[in-house]
Length: 320
Image (tube, rainbow, N blue to C red; front, side):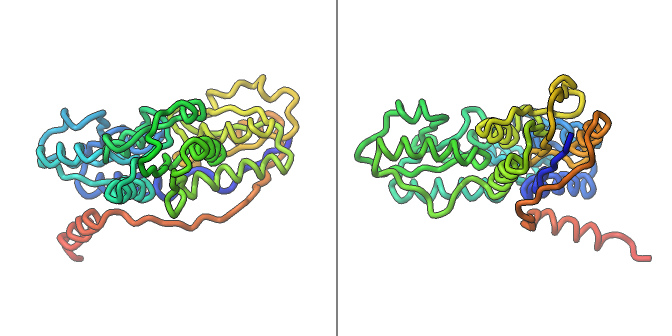
């Protein structure tokens, strides 16, 4: 059984930045550090941070006043910043810059007189935050069925924006239906689906072309971009499963498989991926062949306020 490993896979720049922010907060301020929602959608990352003294909360109400608090990579609505200010929290925003870009687009296009048609999954943390920027000027569309039935104004200016972690092909299908029904629908100057989401989907397509006949995507069940990778394979006739780790693999899946592909969502740690590769090698896998489609070198800087805190703490340390 051949083993094909996708590259790129795993952590993207936004996830890497968010994790680094929490680690820096632990180093500079010490535990406890509060984080609103999961910092990224991965159970292993969350479990590791809990062990280090991070306290995850759904909302800010239980956070003690003036506490160090981090906002997750998925972004929040403006009301969350207001709540943080009222509690005088020491707030560090770990929102991915590409999500922030969509939030800024909402404000820009609403100012220009547009009604926003947001393509995304209802209840996803990113969608909640984006819609919160201008809820009265935003309509959510989740799939092609809703695109065929949604009731929008035939005379109002319409702008489509998307959740950053969606499937590129599915998003285009929704846009095509909306465009047919509402010819005045405009698209932003640049695509909202993030580079890492696109790259990981392209990598799965490359695995298919390389002969993959079974796909394992390593990622947690609430990871939207990881779930989309399974769908990309299935759309090309390749059976696949989303697994959080080796304990979720059913060995019976491998019966008759000649070439298994392995990839991971953008919030999956590399060590979990390596555990899956070892599992496969112990069950007949013959080495690992890496299929590279693009080399990623994007880096997002941590917030300036946090960098200054690090510099101040370093300057206050006694010199030897």
